[in-house]
Each structure stands twice: as C-alpha cells, then as structure tokens.
Image (cartoon, rainbow, N blue to C red; front, side):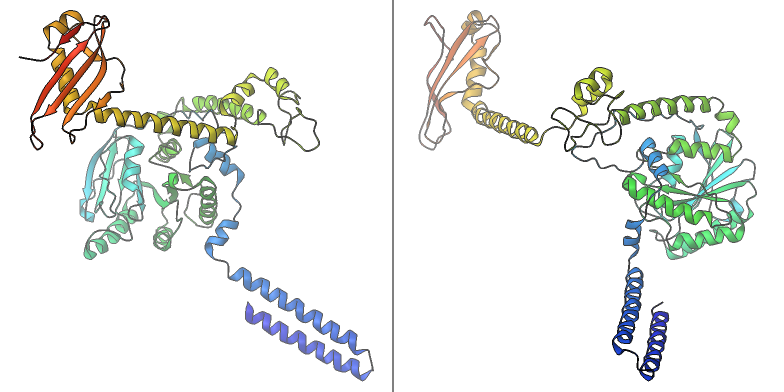
Length: 500
C-alpha cells in the first residue's frame, strides 16, 4: 500500500513539474503554480499517513472499534450470558427470563476407543464434541445431561481417547481428545489426530461435529487447521462459544459477531453460533434443543416445549416493557423545580412528575423505593456509622473477652454455681447480668493480686454482686490464696462461696 502511494506521489509531482515548466514558457504567474504543487503534495501525504495509521492498528484496537449487533446484546441480556457491569446510578432488573427447562435423558458411559478397531457398532445418531485442550468439552457433556460420567480436570489433556456416552439408547454424545497443548507424551498426542480424523471420516452415524471455541479468544490457529480438515472431509460442524461467564457481555457480542461472519464463509459450517456457560447453566437449553433437532428427536422430547417457551417469552417481554416504561426520570435543564421527565418517553401515561408517575404506575413507585440510586453522602454516612459501631463493638468484645477468659473470673463463676447456699437463694444457674459485662477491678497476674467485682443473676431472678480478692503466694509461685470470695445480695446479706 505504501509503495503504491509513493509511486503515485512521484508521478503526481512529476506531472506538476512538467506543468510548471509549461507555465514558465508561457509566462504564467509562478505563485499559482507553486501553490498547486504544494496542495497536491500535502494531500497525498495526508492520504499516506491515514492509510499507514490504519495499517498500524493492532487486533485489540480493531476489536475495540467493532460495533456489536443490538439483537445479540438483547439475547445475551435475556439469557444472562456474559458478565455485566452496573454503574452506581444504573438500575438492575428485578426480573429474569424463566426459560423452560429442556431435560435430556440420563447419560452413561458406553465405550472408549484408543484405536479405530475399538469403535462401537454404528447404531444410534452421534454428535461429536471437539476443540482445543481445556476448552471445556467434558464439562459441557456432563452439564447437558446432568451427569458426571465424563471425567473432568483443570489440566489440559485428561481425555486421551474417544469416549462414547449413550443417552437412554436414543443418541450418543462423543467426547474426543483435544488438540493443542496437553499434559501427555508427544507420541500420545501425535496419535490423537489420526484417531479423530479416522472417526470423523468413516463414521456414518455422525450427524454433526460441535467445535468448541473459548469465548475469550475466538478462532485460533489450531482451530483453523481443524476446520480446514472438516471442510476437506465435507462434514457438517457448528461452533459453540464456551466459558461465556468469563467475558464481558459487550465483548461476548463482538466475539459472536466475528465468529458468525467467519461461519458464513465456510462451506460445511452451520451458520448459527451457540453460546454457553457451564458454570452458570446459561445457554444450555438452546444447545439441548439443537442436539435433539440434529438427532431428529424434537417431536419426542420437545412436544410441549414450544408453548411453554412462548408463555415465558411473553411474560419476559411484559416485564421488560414495564422496566423500560418506568425508567428513572432525569432532571432537564430549564424545567421547573419538581418537574422531571425521562430521556426517551414520559414516565407513565403522559405523567411528568414523580407524584403522577407513582399514582399511575405502582410498579414505578416500588422500584423507586427499592432499586433507586442512593445519594453519595448517604452511602458515606452509612459506611462511617457501620464502621464506628463495628469498631466500638469489637473493642468491647475484645476488652471483656480478655477479662472473661482469665482464669480467676472463670473459676469464680464456676465455683459460685456449685455452692449450695447460692443454689438455694439465686437458683441452679448463675450467669452475668449482660452479654458483655464490664468487670471492675484489677485482674493483672503480674502484680500478684486479683480484685474483681461483677453483677450476677440466678434463674430465680435474684441478682447479686460477686466479689473475688486473691493474692499470689510468693512472687514467682503459680499458687493463689483467696482473701475474700462471696456474693453480696441487694439486702446486704453475704453468701460465702469459699470452699473448705
């Protein structure tokens, strides 16, 4: 491109120079000729710079400039596919699409083949799953039928043979080894490709091959090589984007657009690109229906599904209409105070104020109270209040726990509970008067003495004040001598709790 532009630039410059010589011969004004030369040269330079800047854009920059299909984004929003980012003042939907569940029969392991002679007889329609290692083939097979028959692992290369799974003797799901990097020996990985190629070329009951693609990366070099192999063998195949829960919803729509465009240009590829998330179970019902139609089992398993789907879709559209009609009003410049309106349509039935909208549309009033954005000052104030209460409560708990966990306090309460006179007056159970009592006195062991007082209450409702005074016998000794240990009742009586 740049060579062509340079050639064009040189030719144009030569043409203008020849014209300049001709103008000189006829005594034309030189100023106009030089102006024409300068204008043409700058125009070509600008074109060259613009073309070179487009050539220097990276794939990431081109992907960022891509405009996704709005219909695809609406579908992703309905099926809850992809991650979604909400702004601080952006509302969240209080409803979701209650998609009717498509249940496939229970799946069990049928056969495994490491060579062509080990393939089971051709009896039932088969759908194969293939893709790069660790793209999620075995996980998807398990999720489709709600089974754990297929072994899964975080490390690529666990599936090292072609595994056949049968579903109620109606059809087979075939899990094939992945291509690309795998934790396996080189000779084993080299043997997988001829095995897969032999199965796809010679299997007559194979209805379709599902090529799994990572939604984060799309079609890579290894995928293109395998797609070329499928086209040469004239086998029908279809793309499935997996791990959609790891991609932002807008980026997922862009990735779907790129893969769909490429699928339209491939001879044996089904144009419809599926999107699934095995972790969130999103998009699996669409894939189940596609498998049943592929195996000609739609009438058996999807007899009443169409009616349920129409009802669910109608309910979703009604909720979506309410959601859009009750969009939060925004203050417009020049509108009198108290008058609000939305950016696209009136609030409800032509209402232009909060009060009119609330009276004419109760759903708007409920959403305003429950889902409306809060003030930033209110959020900060609430955060500070919660932090202060948490800090204060934590300090009290830690301070009292230090005292309650000390040996003299625990031993004093335990000993007082087993005193006969205490049981007769206060009751069988003796506890603190509050959950976190403030224990007065000094319980420092380092100073060699313990003097504490705290309120207690029995199960008879009688309260008292437990007094404990102890001294350490010797400076380094671990023995303690009780000087006073009693419970003082409200009338002044004292119950001695010292044991003989």
